[in-house]
Image 1 (cartoon, rainbow, N blue to C red):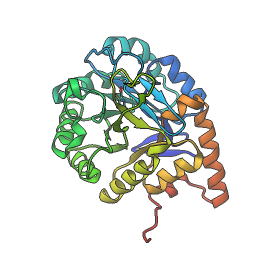
Image 2 (cartoon, rainbow, N blue to C red):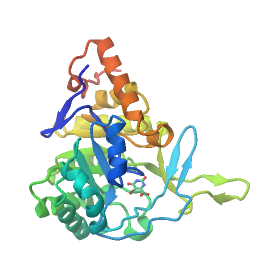
Image 3 (cartoon, protein in one colour):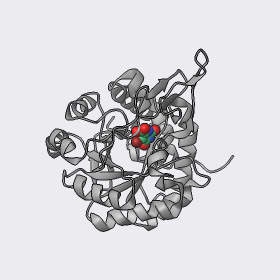
Length: 309
Ligand code: RRO
């Protein structure tokens, strides 16, 4: 079964991408991701701003959830260009470059810099839950601040496709997505990690993460992701492509996000436990499910959620 999917003119051999996170930092990792069967790559979030990130431990992993507070380490544009520039020029799969900034102006500056590498799209990470001490409240927590970033980036690099990555930590995610759409966003990525949450080691009575709190990901947040995707798909009347993210480990998990309205699905936390081969496992599961259901075009699943009880 052919899982090909075309979104905003970008052709993916299957709808599965990496979610921005602890992978796709280097060209070597990107090649391993391709070898694992991913249809596309979203890179780690980069910026022209240089940051150290939080000290270890930065990840707590359990059977049900994962907590992370990596803290947006970034070595600036030149280092990323040196390593990833050639991979992006010769990319075997579409590459969405994730960027961040501590201010609206820095987002525009980072967009201008990283767009030079020629990715298929930029993803604006306006929703990291782990850097509020330095950057303040994430831009995606309110419609006006989210829209301000989108507008500034569109003005700076009008020709490039942009996705805005939103947080589930809001009362009305559809309102934020609509504000981004109105500001000129081409697509929406849903969802960044939930929380922040905290894990304590009872033996020491101390928080395990050096940052004390971190974003929650993994299977525990899948229902939250499905609901957020369904809300945004409905509010935008399916006009804005959505990259769905949240706890995907199987083909049926990916199909569920597509039923809610995702055109593409990204995988993050499951890479930690299953390695890059997770992409082939999930793609095979999707193909098997589609064949069983008599579905020949994967795009036919997108937004197929039925109204009713
Ligand atoms: O680096 C991080 O700690 C991080 C980021 Br940028 C993000 O967007 N989401 C997250 O859970 N962690």
